[in-house]
Length: 134
Image 1 (tube, helix red, strand yellow):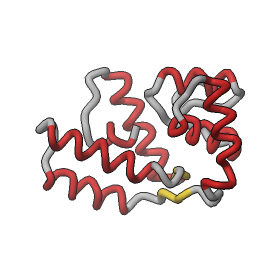
Image 2 (cartoon, rainbow, N blue to C red):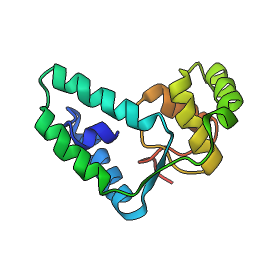
Image 3 (cartoon, helix red, strand yellow):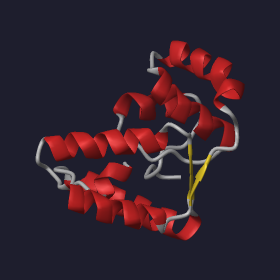
């Protein structure tokens, strides 16, 4: 969802949800797994290569991100490995997506995602997806 703060979504509902998520992060902060930064970087690079954004715009976005209270999860990846593998197997997710699922379930924090399969797994596992009615 963080990429939608920089790259406009075609779906107006998703664009509005991304804006709400950005507001929430601005007020309350966010906790992300360590893989979040490389994933954001990769999404930005792919967008540059497809000429959807520019290096200059990405640098400005990086500066904006640096102003947000985004904290890395304090649990080490080796401490969550077994849970991530189990969740990935159970919900047929990638290990990357299961990492977000594990973090959300462990912390009780809502997960902001546009990934339908991940959102469905989180709901079925008893977690909260950002934007769902409470």
